[in-house]
Image 1: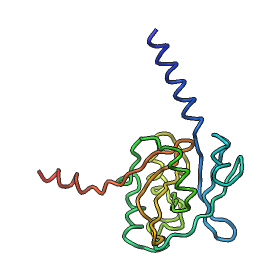
Image 2: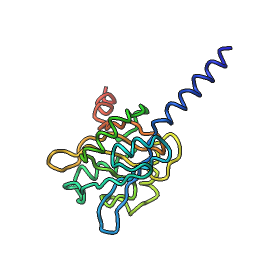
Image 3: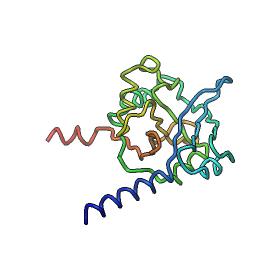
Length: 183
């Protein structure tokens, strides 16, 4: 009897989770403008309707962030440590918070094919694996979303899109583990 209960609970959780799923990817258009594309085929059309008044596919223009197309310490850290210190917390993101951030336009999205990458060869196998390691299931090109600061620079890491599931991200600089290893 309890096995049936567990199965029914799991089935309901899967159905309720998929009801609010969101698939997104980033791209550069022919005019060299960065875009975040929301694909609402897999979830509720109301998400795309809310963001850009389209039912199935929503294209959100993304301004190029300040100092992102540069070999800065922050950008080096992001691409060198994706999947190492930039990690998926496994907490499923609140879809309303994700949508609010996207609607605000105050975000930076990257994946392993990012033109912001000045560390690895474009779409290198190693970098792709680092990004893919963020997702519990295989996703070709997970998209990581950061806040954009008021000065236009990239801020705190927020989310990773793994197919139709978006997770909360965190940046563990490794300082605490390094200190604990000393004792």
